[in-house]
Image (tube, helix red, strand yellow):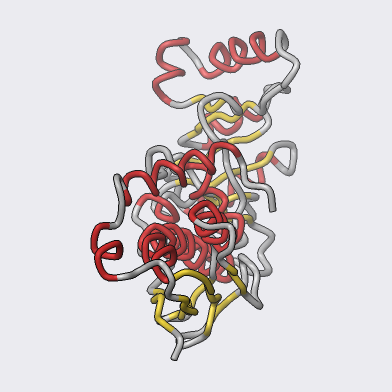
Length: 282
């Protein structure tokens, strides 16, 4: 798999951050002639993500390292399961160990949490979305992990979708004027990004949904009753995204209101890494 240039840059930066002028402990103890096989072992159930990043890390350090796995990114793993192995010079594998695990554990943590939310809304038709609440500089990796967990990406940044929020509306003077300003700018571009607007009540839903240029309505912190009313009012004319107060207990009832998307900030803003170990094979 060819790695995205931005991801290559992130990995290069991470290796430089950890290695600096060299792994002095490994350099002191290992001659460089030792050969090992190291195994990545899942220490808890989850969804694995980041295998291709780990492969790239080891190959950047030494193209002779053999990284082998029988599973793919996005597969579920069980506690105690062998995820992958790395075979090659011991000093190289030890030097790359921490960086490889940092990426693999974080991405797998995001994918695992995403998969859990996706499973909770199974059968409802609602898709789980991420947000921009990502680790600075790691957005492409965080959002890649969300996809591997079965979720979908919202906008990547401020540049690829209009998202009109309360402060924008206040400056523009009204919902209609905010929409019109975005629509005028969009009409001058070739990309034609989607226009989404945050709404807080049914009156705002009706006003926003009446505009032909609006693609998505974000139902911000609405009650389940009002979400269901919004679905009825819009009647499929626009896509609806539920946002705010989404957790394991609320996500299924929200999905059952009939919304199209549910955005979940905690997928990436408070990541719990999946516990994975790298052990020497006996």
